[in-house]
Image (cartoon, rainbow, N blue to C red; front, side, top):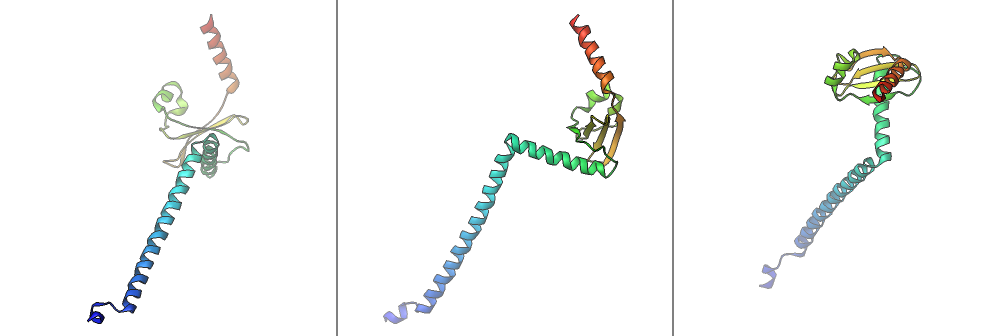
Length: 149
């Protein structure tokens, strides 16, 4: 009578193996998810540091330079790069920014005295011009002098 109530040993071993395989798969999946989450967290923490921001900025500058370099021959120098954010004000003060949109990039090559506006959304050069830094500085200095008087 006891023989009919007991499950044969091969079936018990098979069920234990199936359970072990499932547990092992769950542990592997959880380990992979945990490792991925840890790597993402560490990357986010690194990007919050000054060095991480500088690295990100360097990557962005290199990306913008690469895209602009496909559209025009660039001077052999590092540009000052800025994202354009307040188009309405810029359009009021300087005609150079007439066709610019928020999110476009301004590249200023100081030694070559060139400025380039690139639109990543449209993948075009919006404007290219030369800089007159000396007269601009002189104008700013004279305005500052007038304000102080």
